[in-house]
Length: 395
Image 1: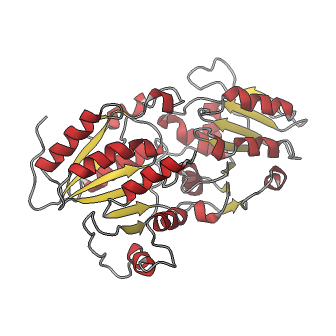
Image 2: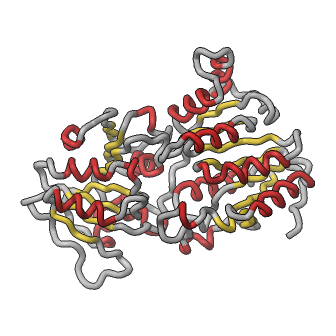
Image 3: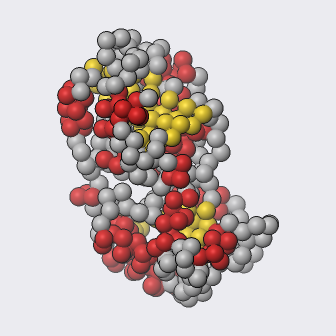
């Protein structure tokens, strides 16, 4: 494939990261970023022919076929996580035809070596920008932290979406309040006035830019609650939603223990693939807690009526342990009364931002410092404190 022509009147930017039809919120944000950049620059989108080794991706497929028609035009799916030759080819091509900047989307340590290889091959005049979704790994280890720091040190700027990530980057780069560079870096991260300072070479100290997290469009217009519940076959009763990949740090076990202490018949709908811990482990915990459990039947598979009305004898939990395609997300958020996000640790959360934008209430943890900056349409956001017990969460 020939390299795109360079319009001298626009900056040339290469964007490297997951885009549609890769699934989940990071691919959504990268696709949206590509669309916005294309309005102001000559943009080249470089994505992955293979995103993860199968061993490191415990879910099913990482492709959402409903998004294939929304793939950015002329996107190159050329980087293979298991083939270093693809990293080298990409780096050499960008060296031969150098862009003004390369934006690397960062969310997991897996892509540290490919990114470092490409950065090493870029010309010194090319700015390196890291668009960070998660600075720290959710399953931390010393070697993962070392790889992350190696990438951070080779950037011109790091863009983050939560105060906790901003502080984490500054700490990793030795820019804390006690360091000489601290006050200068923090002031450049949030410059006052209409003009933003220029980015440095990627050999200099990176600039930290903190900005809002784009709100997911939820796959389309958000329907009325009654219509959403009809589509999903849910009863007209109080409903809480636990949404997204179910990973240990997201605290589903905390929510289940809290549900056993509720004194009102509220249904908890768990919607998302179970990672690392199997779905059966959560079912077993629910049974041990004496919760009335049900399995959700996907709308495309349902035959006949949906779920019956909620019983009053025990709080009920409905498990939908599958990946929820983009086309169904709006129904889930519209159907619920509250979104539950009892994270043990988190820097930014897509579902929290969606909840704050589309639903009346959201219960999140561990603190407001971990909630991304997004425009909010919610009437109230409740946040539990660090170390919050299931009993306190239930209240």
